[in-house]
Length: 289
Image 1 (cartoon, rainbow, N blue to C red):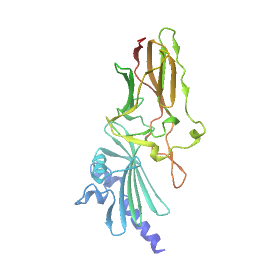
Image 2 (image 1 turned 90 degrees about the vertical axis):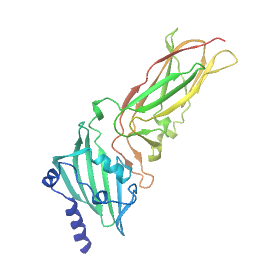
Image 3 (image 1 turned 45 degrees about the horizontal axis):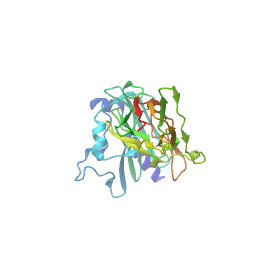
Image 4 (image 1 turned 180 degrees about the vertical axis):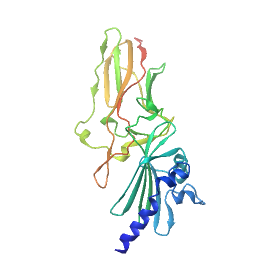
């Protein structure tokens, strides 16, 4: 019973009224562990007392105190939406919020007897920056017939990308023979029995705003019979005869959650964009000699 009253006391301390929030400039409540100066501002697990750990998360990824504080300063409370509820280990207070661009957020203060977690989530139902996709795929070819592709985060927010499980949703290269109008069919090298495996958290990488990564870089290889072949991601193109070609990438983002390695439950971080993207098109010639 004593522990129950302690939990209720902690819960009440975190349940700040909307009027209090508005009187402080309409900004969301900042955790005391952020306000308190520290000799190590980037410590991710800050102990407010000997037994309590404080963690900061943005879209499920643990971040430093300073990074969390920087993001929090951009966000404003929407006073009409706030909820609080009790959990098995403590309580959670939730706030709906937005930034100056109109992007929506959910801010959670999760607390128990030995921990405090501060979570900031982008709300996926609201398109970031009012654009159809946060991604841009660029395809290019060098003079020595090496085809390369990269993907860039063109949004203002970090994005999760399923990258280390590529054969689950590959970046599909399309080749068109411009003389015949034929789309060249590639051999699919994927093991479909393995595609039943769920992605895990390690299957994803986080791409910061404005950053890009290489998807693939592969050369056209000339065979003894004068034709060419190309191995691209999980696919193999063979018998590419000399001539004029065009190429582009199609990619479908269809996986927005991963399986927790311990609980085996599916986890949705909340900011994985779903949809189809097509890259720019390139044209090139496979020479006879």
